[in-house]
Length: 267
Image (tube, rainbow, N blue to C red; front, top):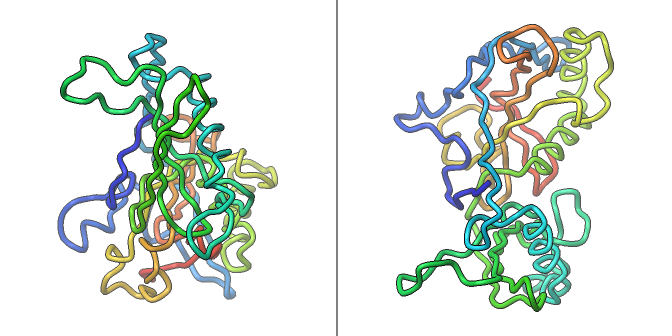
């Protein structure tokens, strides 16, 4: 799937300050309760409309095949520049802190006005480098295995990948305030323990500090935008509710993936 590298994130609402805080699913904004020093995340029964992935087209001048995308990503991550990273930051890192920038999107490069098709055998890869908090775009040649061009921008936050959303859940579960409430919500709905993000259906959106302007707790997320921050929509699959799953209300939680911490805002 393609993602647009914009500062609006995955689903940034339009309008005034109040409307920007309304999440596009009925998550029950009052469901975050403070009890004995622990924030409890209440599961709700409403669901957001699902999205259907675009069909993979194997035409050479159409979207990249799965194999082409994997190959392009490997070329981009293994490029010698990734070992040097940005000035003063060392090797590029992914959301988990491991070597190599985080893959976000891979697609056929835009065709030039003078050509009727995208460049033959080329792919464009978007990566996020957590060592320098920068978005990297690399154009690669699938035939030669070489990187043809590489650029880096700061303060640009595309929608998070599934791997980033799962990393955000790990940060939530490790949080002493939020982890117990999230586990309790899952156990209440399923009678099972929550041990892995893979047990949840996740959607995410990039979060910018400007969206918290004037809201209680805004200082906790003041670096979001320069940092990689996300908000999550978390569904418990197989539980009662429309589209086959109940939602855990995480609408007031922002996870700073760069700093590896979570904040509760607006309470």
